[in-house]
Length: 313
Image (tube, rainbow, N blue to C red; front, top):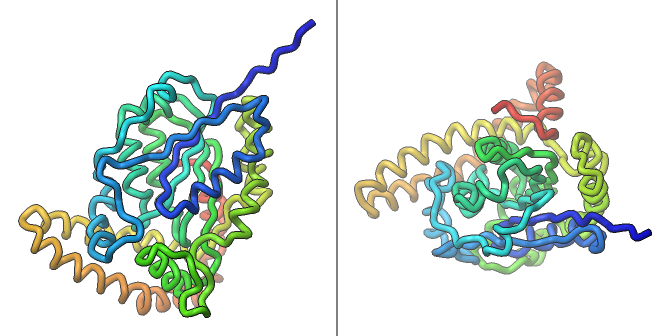
């Protein structure tokens, strides 16, 4: 009697400028048994690619459209992928301006995304500096609109304190070199140790794929520290989104009139960011510490929700 293995098909959709997220995803999928699972990859590509390294003007100029999730044109998915039926989709994305990167939200607005994600279980994989919670909430909403089901989430973030990570990430973005700035700062981004150890998530995902049961997947991923919540960053992320909303509306409105007007307000926004990072954020952190004892119940509830794959949409 012959026994046949029913092969499962997984599609990895991702956008990565620096290659960091590509390495994370490759490490996760490297643990899959290739006799039981086939993996296809689709890297999201723009019709007009965003630069890496960035110039300062280019970086700040993408803010309004990124935050407001106004899509740009992306290159189509290959017909071979569109014609194939997948059992699971892994969606990897970075964070731009407290929002999924513009290439990611642009892709999710396409008919290709609708075809590939509709009625599919989805695992999100995030590689970022530190604030990702509200970006993930925005992505959850997109997945609901596409009738996709979020079943897992893995977040790898820069572990260094906020102001150190700002200095190192900015240097990386504008030079394209992942280095120890001045020879004294740590390397930017997700630590190589965390990137290498991402392989630990592979066997967990594989088990649930082969069983075709994702009900307890996120809990199992959390046992391997797939998500770590810093309570202060929840508050900072929410407040940042409120303020960014005002700035995005203002700059977009001014940009409708002229490029000169848009650039003028983008300069103001740049200086606001510096003020917010170096002055406002420390003050908010002190207030958070002073009121922590009165917010323990809410903090616990928030940590439980944002670690999960639940949504309110």
